[in-house]
Image (cartoon, rainbow, N blue to C red; front, side):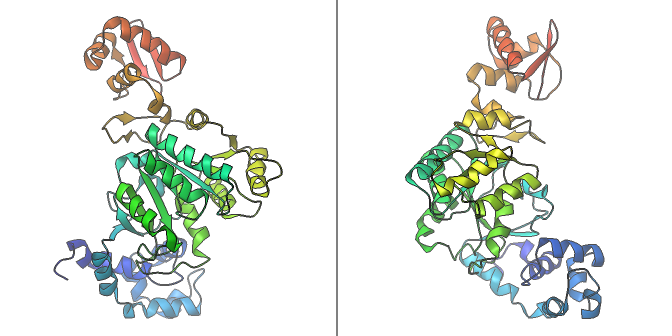
Length: 376
């Protein structure tokens, strides 16, 4: 165990991991238990009678919690080390900020690959496993174009639409993230093992389950909330009226995320879910411009892979001069024209004409004849 990071020897971390590995203790139950007992160690030290006074904890679950000491977490940690799987706690600086905003973020996430600050600019693409050639083409197209624009593409590595979205992002050389309902070394479906390796190389694989955990049917809806929670918005490409993709869309709405849908043929049963979403107010999408127009200012600035500070997704579509002006105004403070010229390195005539364009796009506002400020 000497090869393990110091974090893995920390008693508080070990208690958190042990509780996360108890079957039946999901994020919401964990939150309720922590409110009652204060710490993860306090939960594990509680008696069965104390546990059963907590809402949602019955005899079977209290039995599992009180016998959690039998879980061999050193074995699980060793497997993570052997399989190149990291363990990321909620308090970890790498933990995706967007996920911390949902009501029930996982206290522990297993990770292959890397999380980047640029992942704050993520859009999910989800849809049916039984996709048509049209659906597959659109999922790959949007995965490609979003990645080219600077977004991270998030999905679930499933057959059909998910896989096409990941492949589009990979083909663009962009970042992509897959949330799994299984362990990170128990890839499902098994034919996507190579795709999983490519995603981990160019982004990240994430799961709430330990490395060798098999996929359980109930884990897929649970996983869907993470796909949408990690994203600014979700694009639904082909979904039947009863499908996991519509569960994802509902999760997105509950989390305050934008929902987009791509229309399909009216005689395609797998398009009816998208059409229902459109009737209920989802944004109809024909190009990524439709996505950029709908996504509002970020709750906090994000860094792109090349180090630029982005305050709103629409900035990803700016030309070189427009980007230089926005970066010159990155601090959000009123700035005089001389400073904009100096910071951007552009001639004054280019600065003035570009600011006029940015004003029309409502990205900046002129405070006076000689001062300008970001509007987002």
